[in-house]
Length: 534
Ligand SMILES: Nc1ncnc2c1ncn2[C@@H]1O[C@H](COP(=O)(O)OP(=O)(O)OP(=O)(O)O)[C@@H](O)[C@H]1O
Image (cartoon, rainbow, N blue to C red; front, top):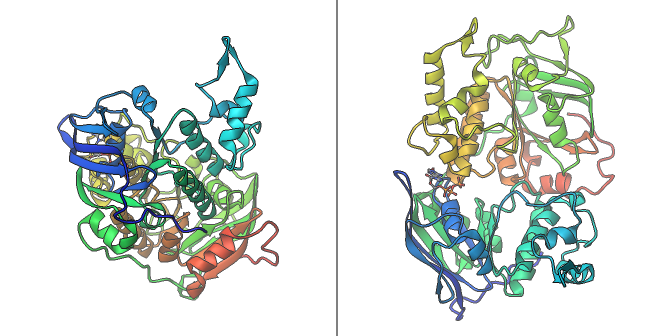
């Protein structure tokens, strides 16, 4: 891969965007306390900070989505603070959010030109449309007439960026654009950004990954508690430790699980799944020991995610059986899931049955997880545990309160208190609520799909420690993560998926980033022959 063509330090470069003393107050909360930054034309400017540090608020002000309480924003020599989104877009500033705003039913070219159709005598000039679209899509590797719904994750993100450029964008703000991309896709997106940068496009890039900031950014601004905690106009001089220190204001001790070998794990008492069939899934046998952490790795479509989902009945498997360990185990009590005489039960038909079997699942999508924004953090935390917190239909309010407070503290949720509405939380803190909610159900088997997505470096470490501690009490955990560092540091075993099945199992010193990348993500179609089950 081409290394980032960084601007030489000290070279005169035009400042395209400048913010001075930006303050934003929400009710009593001061989300930004006088932040200033300068972004050079044709650079990639990183924005880093803990959950709730103020990154989204800052780009909200720059993009016109929110109005600053005070402070100034300059585009070139024009003061633009307080203008709305449309005016900011007319001035060339576009915010591209995490979720690609693509209309699947339209073609790529129609999506590209959405809202900016070239007109001739009041009619849409289709030929001009195609010419323009072809020009813009040139080099992006996307066919203008392809249906947008068929595009992959990276192409959709590229299309969103191109659409902003087509509408006159000069400064493109990308809010965590690499979320849920594979390593290979992330690299393709970075190459695309480098090409555009070489043509003079400016990016503001929000990420929680030091690795990404160091790889793609020229400059960085680090926010902590609503204030500027550090900045550099020459990222090449920084390293990951220095970035973490700026983010946290202290050194970070990275967590490494003391990996358990298959021999050291209990042979009895774990969950076992047999002959599981679902669309895109054909797993003959998967067993997980009590207290074991297994990573599922594989490209999209490999079956890793689909298998994890059908363990939770979401959607249900077509066939298969599960052997549920004794319900009186330490991690869960009061399960009403009844295995058959042989100890085997059919696969859960829906999440409710899965919960009863002691299986909990955190999806990679907060909205699908059903975070209810208008309800309090407290309500959201205990929502999935109501069965366990009630007896004979009565909810034990005291236990509910205790559980909510304990999980609130344990997750380090940054908010005035558990009564705060979930809507008022930063994205990363909402993710902590979702994670806290599944942990509060005390499952026997916890399935985590991208558990630390959007979570900052400090909390990520806490989450890893908490998961480790839960396994010490016998909880089994399955983790799916595109963050290979995370995978390597927290799992005991990795199951590599391809073509719907488990094709390789890695343990001990075989679990390295390089092995994982080669086994799971660089796997060519048809690889994985001679596969073995764990
Ligand atoms: N609509 C709102 N009402 C009240 N407080 C808010 C609102 N939006 C944000 N905040 C608060 O402002 C602070 C900054 O939040 P912001 O979303 O900017 O953080 P962030 O750095 O983007 O975090 P994350 O990495 O978690 O997305 C947080 O304390 C948050 O709770």
